[in-house]
Amino acid sequence: MDMGDEVKVFGSWGSPFSRRVELALLLKGVPYEYIEEDIFVFENKSPLLLQYNPVHKKVPVLLHNGKPIAESLVILEYIEETWKANPILPEDPYDKAMARFWAKFLDDKCLPAIRKAAFSPENEREEAAEEVRDCLKTLESALNGKRFFGGDAIGMVDIAANFVGFWLRIIQEVTGEELLSVEKLPELFKWTEEFVSCSVVKKCLPPKDKVLDVVKARVAPK
Amino acid sequence: MEGGVVLLDFWASMFGMRVRIALAEKEIKYEYSEQDLRNKSDLLLQMNPVHKKIPVLIHNGKPICESLVQVQYIDEVWNDQAPLLPADPYKRATARFWADFVDKKMYDSGSRIWKTKGEEQEAAKKEFIENLKLLEGELGDNLYFGGEGFGYVDVALVPFYCWFYAYEQCGNFSIEAECPKLIAWAKRCMQKESVAKSLADPEKVYEFLLQLKKAYGIE
Image (tube, rainbow over all chains, first blue to last red; front, side):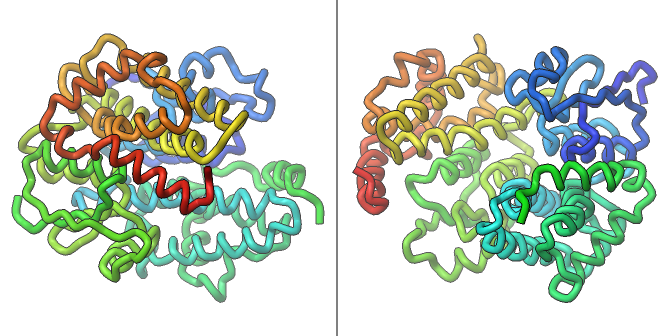
């Protein structure tokens, strides 16, 4: 590794997208400086963040030797290509394509469904919950008997699924709606336990009680 | 590289066009299979059970879904000619960012132009043009988004060009008047055989859109 490497992450403590980037850097043993951004109040976003991500104005942003990259999955691909330790993508082009497919599925389908199930008004919640269960059932098929989506070690899909691994249970607790049941989705449920038990993941999860407070504040009361 | 290549596609799909362009750039022989989206084939449902959508790229019998995933796969497997993504990791990240931007913004804002009327439509047109202007900014003075050469972002974006006429008719506006640099770029891309052969005829796209509007019950 180039000793002149300067790596910074603009993130937010509660954001799964931001934590994805930190997880990848931790996995690969890349030292970085973390800068906390207040994403709850737009006016509080730092001028630097707005300069580095003028298009979306969001976290996370990775700054490598002064050059910014935005969008968590784009950042993960960059991290993979730049730091070779502990690869998070398979080498085989077909397997790589499948990993990219599932990462995109998580962001395009699972996450919006989970957001809807969590934050919709009460009368829309049951339908939204059904959609989440369908998404999760589909996601589970990608595990295919493996310990992690990445095989024996966590990979890009596991990292991208961090909100399923950690945030989802908190949402369930608050809404009282069961989304990931051990009976109906035993493999995926087991994966969430494996995921949060990983030592490197543990270093990279926000405090549960703080996340619980944020979710409670946002969920419409029953 | 060996192995049969099949593309399940729909003639008017911008996403399918991306894959057609990539295959043409790499001079890959493949079987094109036009799909009936109102009556989806067993093959399509089997090859893309998750989304049940086109395009689906089938290589050696194994399916790959999602157009940008397919384009990257093609770039990696047929890496002997016409590289679409640059070699430098930072440039690759920039290309991925902008292709993702196209995915997140163009289809939605474009669709809203033909699906809505009045104030909603004006808002959709405004957003659409703003997005194109951001892309123009990224293009700068380069010939292509890929720099000197045609690349990944060009592939991701240029298929929308054959839908511009339809959007303009529905929205009663001129995209060229607002974004001349972008139209110049699109015309430059159309000089390439891979693009010219892959994009649908804008008039046919407009006719198709009119049928779609009828089906959706939109005037």
